[in-house]
Image 1 (cartoon, rainbow, N blue to C red):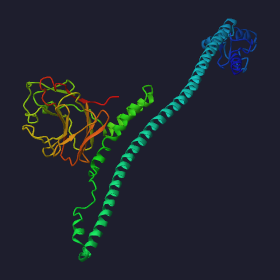
Image 2: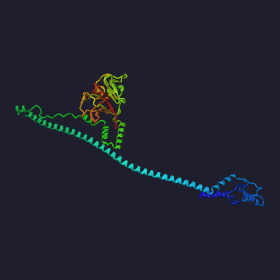
Image 3: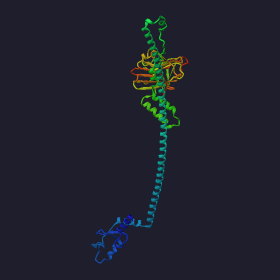
Image 4: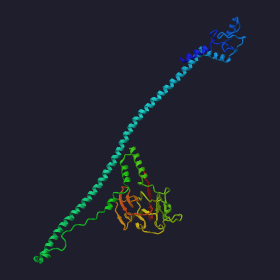
Length: 449
């Protein structure tokens, strides 16, 4: 409606006041009024008193006017716009514009429906995943809780067994003490009436006490503590890994996250160690990634270094530690002899020295295929459940301990206490190959899922 009103107003402005039609060759008088050229000339022809303006009646000295070309062009444009052809063209343009917008509206509606379907699908899938994740984490929590109950039950059972044994021993000792107390009273009574006691009665009294209580082995509290210590979080992580199913992707992701957390917090996840070639005896040869070492019969051409072991086929790890807790695993496989553990970084590397704590070594060793020793002072013979193919070493700098495990089942092998050094280095010795008997490489194991 506003458009039509504007068109009507424009046509009125472009209409001649004489013929009431759109201007034809519009001209402008000196009074600024506009008329058709033909209309003003005809009007002046009929005017008896000289030329004047039909609208304002102003008189002019002559028949003077100016052609208004701009107004003429505007009138032509309005006249064309009013034609049927232009009306049809404008209608076609508007119809095309309407059709294009309706088509775009259908497109947007379709896209809106698709997005709404995605919203519904996402909401449904998110709910399903939420339920699944909660269920799998509930399973993980259950596994952890079951493992906690199992470990605490085993600890409680062993503790109760030890306590029961100690209480039995206390009972035996008390029984023996009661018998001895009766004997003591009897002997005292006999002494108090010596005049009335016959020689035969005295001689029949055995000098030796009549009670014999077997001596029980002393309770090794330190061993009890050591066998339930170590890298507990890593041990439980290993058991968790064995408990999950391969298809439990969320659980697998959780185990990866737990492994990363163990490594971030330095809570004794296996450290990615490498061997330090600069410290290695010249007979030792390494893999390209410095995680495997074997001994050769002859020395390799290596630079002379004060850090290098010269007498024994030893090598240190490339990482040294002065704080924190650290755990690493070493594959020994079916080697017939080896040494491994921790060494102070100040050990004498030029001389052949005995591996013992006094010389800065806290190590385990294998000799003659089956003889396992902890090189304490004195050495301690070990009897593992089975020959370990992979040995775990746990260094706790704060507690001053070095603990060894059979990394296959994380069973405790031995713990050194009162370990003290400014810096600690992982220590390894392949021992000599003895032809082909002990040629298998010693390998550093990196944690993998």
